[in-house]
Length: 237
Image (cartoon, rainbow, N blue to C red; front, side):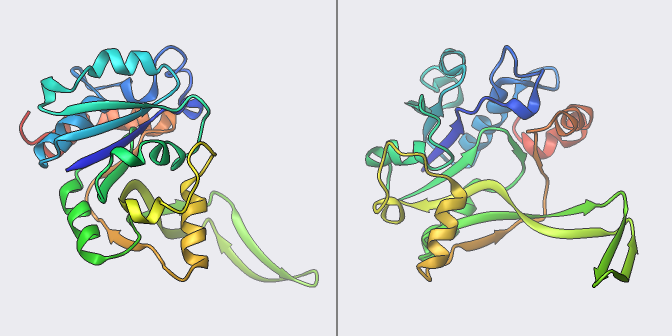
């Protein structure tokens, strides 16, 4: 099984942690980087080929990961020097990928079964499978609804629940063949295009552990609770 890990971003939201180190290599706990955890998980789930799409501080990632042998993986690299968006780097590597493959962000901590995401995608026949998670957004203000200058509804500090993309996808080579490599192309553009074509993506709903460490608060939370979540993330470590 083959996975593409998107690890080329600048990690601007996570500064100052990413001023001197790429986001996938920021430490979690006392022993691991985020990328180390992800690679161990993929190996545990039966993946054997990894393409790392690198850009910002890419040589540090290449030096850290090498050929992937210490995880029992074979790693190759796709360099995203032009900041091609979420799916642009995947198009660059498309010829070297199998028909069905996993794509994921390099800053995700989760205990999702990556192999099951990919297997269910291949079985579904969908053009794209998106792993989703329910998040609750709390509004710290009283929310008003007005109509022609009159307040008609009021909610004090409401909460809203949404299903959000986890940054983990099952994809098919045939889905991406219509798009041109070398041009910026985002996940949002792909989803909107598939909807316009009446070939909607499939949802893989997940209720376990998931944390995107793209913001300092989430990164601090991941470190604070790592001793508790480590058995779920790294079952063999």
